Image 1 (cartoon, rainbow, N blue to C red):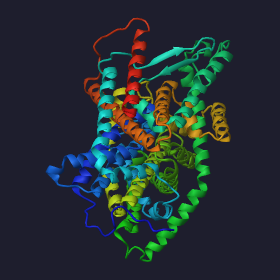
Image 2: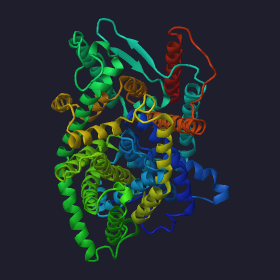
Image 3: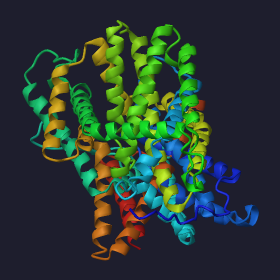
Image 4: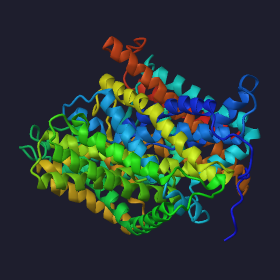
Length: 634
């Protein structure tokens, strides 16, 4: 294999780790992390921020040249690496922590931030022995799409100012558009349309810029698969349940209050479809992990081999571009994390015994190492946005819950302890996917791996408690599980743990959902996006589908001009990322207002007659969609 030649030679005199890089990366990382936290709590998925952060770092350093002096490509890379950690922390927190609130616990910002910190540290450190196996040895095999794209952005730094304009433009448009809805309340936040003939079938849309941006980033195929799952639920399964339950005079389990004939479509979705969707996502996640077992085994084998070689002094004489943090840092980090968990009852629960804390620590170390390996390999093929973190977390929760079940620890405290184990593992696997993309970008441009690993650790330290505060504030202001903040993934994790430890899960509905996941796999359709579509409200999927459709339009309009097609895709992704960050920051501001005043913004008191408000909302969203098309094609 031909030796890789990085953009910056290994013997360069450039500094590749500066205080300004870390500070700028941390600041913008928190901004995009907050946006990702909100969109994850709203839609159950998050997106990679590597590319927009790379673009912003180039633009900011260029603007600050008169003050800070000329920057280098390695400066920008460290800023991007530091900042991207926050979005991965947000993913892990929002997938699990809200379940504690739904159980009636009230975890402090300190506890949430500590769990994020522990998971982030494990995710970064476990990648030390895996970098050579996955990033270096498989350079031509695993593309790591976001990392490769971020490297190209940094290499094309002379275009940085124009590209960054798109991110900031999207951020401004997203913030203004969401402010008109959430603060001024000029039009409704949701649009619904009942379908004749089909009982209780209903189409819906949340016309927001963030979901539109998510759809453009995901692309038409994944967006289409997700909305297909939503259509199956809302114009297929719900009408079917309504049809067969029309003459029932008693409630049908798991509903205990109303018969189906008296239930609204939303109530049917909440009581039945959510359970079916949970089964679909759980089985889809398990299938994904099973398919990854050969990868996991090979990567573990290589990791152990590299660990053995490192003990023999392999890392003494290496180029700058091939030096990782010492393997002793990994061992020390694991020991510190384990000791903190064992000696701090507050982490797994104040009333937990020493033996339970010890078992929890062992579960965390074991599952974190396994799924860090899986996560890094998977994102190398499909990217961070498609990383099945929820599936890995479900497997962790199932394994931990079965251990706790065997020990007879099945009360609410046991459930909370199992969830906190899943939280640390979820964050660790999410961070591993992120730093893998960063290390790939660094490998291409010629960064020093140990500097990147250090900056990622600093990014974890800098953003863990900021993201914890953001999630805590959103939950206090809007309530997890509400229509405003459904926290779908955390609700799913709660359902899994209750089902194993409580024994009250409607397994028939769960297995029905699992069958949908199996059918999708047999049809060679990615099961997780389809399963998520079943599980989430169709109103969330609709704008995502429109965003994916817009991307197809702008790419097809370029014809066979691949360069033009690539430029339009990149521009749209940057605008979409801005939409997400702008809406997320706006909603954090609204949450802060609601928390301080104990009420949400009242708006200007505008009242639309009949369905006119929904038509206005649809028109405004179409204008936003048209703007995205215009700016991308222009």
